[in-house]
Image (tube, rainbow, N blue to C red; front, side, top):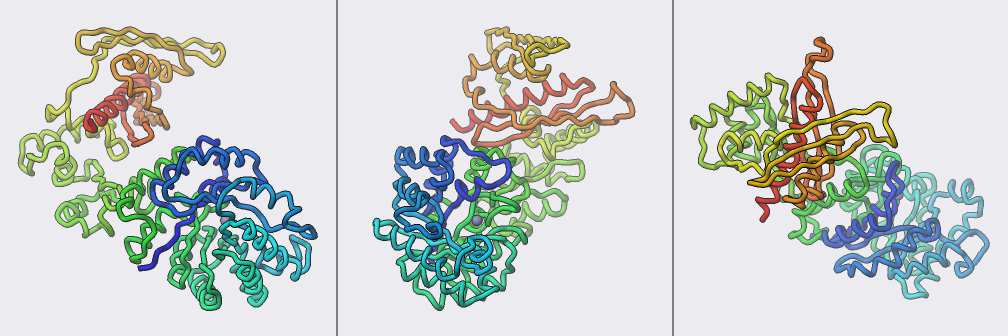
Length: 523
Ligand SMILES: [Zn+2]
């Protein structure tokens, strides 16, 4: 078993992804999560190119990290100046971290065409910058940009750049597949050649342009690399970086290496979702290990097999990584599917329980009406609980009214009034919104917040309307799916009606009831 140092660049390389823009607060939150997972290095930004990063470096001390070292990232000195004179190198040191990552060129083509300098000057730029940082007592990671392309073009020169870094005292040398075009066996051979030549710790940094970033990373480890760079969920520019979530699971659960403390493995799923949330990226349902579909079973026979022997259709126990088995509900699913699903609610039921047969009938009737529970398991759970008498309503609706005004004034075109009852108490509230559903949602929350303050944590993240049997024009039924989150969990609820407001209301109520139910269970 080899100890692999996981080096996360979600905050630096991940910030290059299209649509990702972290605030300083976002970065602090992600850093705290990574530290908690047991990540060894957190590359947090480039103080020279992004002054906002300096604020992060100034504040990261507040987190009192227990496991991770914070890394500031920057380039080798420029052509023709000393490292001490170089403005970027100076701002790198201003970050005040104990570790810096210096990136430099390993590909002769990049040196002559992009840097427009001599091959000899490039070697000096690498060596002098690293020696300067070492002279300040820092741990130095050297990132060999375009290393694999450089090796293929001129292996001697590419190796000479690593030699310059090693001689200058770099603590580790990371081989980068910057363009993401290399293939696994090339990575294996080239990394092995480097590992046999240098005593320095060797790292790997892969991009996913050939959809091989994870495979390439595993190959480099196989060849002897012991530092692994990547990002959570693989976020990064173009097709992304190597996905550390999959890599940690592969290395630790399948290849027997040690990346993070074993006790932290079950945090992988929540970490992946939390980082997606903060980066404002919809979690990939099909993500290996941590996606919602990673352990979802639909066909009746699979489900039957999985409930008897999980290993039949699952490569690992989902709980190892904090995920869960999902049994998808639909008409095609048989009685055993339903049973597997509702066992968690009432363990005393068996295949022949009358309640199970009644539930099957109910499910068929609802699907006929236009409900589809495959994507709205939370609503399904509420249906089951209500039928089994395992549900205590949190509130009852007395009435609501929605008004729509056109034209809109200041972006507000709707208002809603709602009257609800909680126990013996009645609450009437009104709210304005951008659209009738938004107004109704706000009015309901306002009414309920007095009784259930946790409702404030619910955020609606997606709202989908689909018209069913559309040949009936405006009398057609609509199916509304609402996705919500409270930053711990994400759930989807459903409503079906001939009226879009009514369908939305049903889905909104389920969203709130599900949250209150979960909170109650957690107590
Ligand atoms: Zn990169």
